[in-house]
Image (cartoon, rainbow, N blue to C red; front, side, top):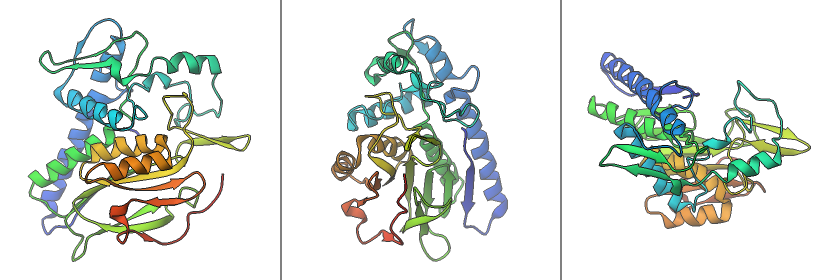
Length: 309
């Protein structure tokens, strides 16, 4: 899925842990075969190929994920939208095709009109999904990794483990303790050196998902262009440098971190405060740090984030 997976278990049974790790690897490969836009024959490829033509059968896991994505889209007023896949290949932020070019404005406007999560229909009884308009494309890059993390969590718990950490790109799930204390997690400084954190907190039995503008980007004429696209404009969103969501579901956290990022700091934090059992930390484009009420007293600010374009 285009990132690295790190698994840690605190246990006296290393052989069983390695067996569980192998199960997770197989499961992630299986999920990628269903949900990857880059995997030939995947269900998501079949869905996109049939856009505007007819519904196609898709796996139950994909239907479940698309329904969760719809819920996150509703919460964020469409700022999170899996049908943004139509923008793929237009903005070139991926390592294999990065070229620091700004796409043609007319083409951006044309494709933007094909983004609308309401035009993605799920039929549970028939086991199908359907993109209503030709040219539409779904992409699970903003939520699929979180779903995979939740599956890894379930595998480890079913295998009898209670103290573990799963890190999959910007999505982390921690369970139980690391020895005699909770797991301690840090938030990347969006403008600092790699792996430099500006805040940290102890966490257990929760997910910790961060979306930021500092991993896939280029700077041109003093402006930072990054991979988190606002569906309303077709351009990289403005207003935030990073968003970290803390909640129970990695799937929800993954989608929300993207949606809140695009909403901007004020509207995004208002949504976080509104949703039950969801907390968050936002670094705005003005380098302000916003912390939700449920994290105050739990989050330690180690230093003010670095300020830079």
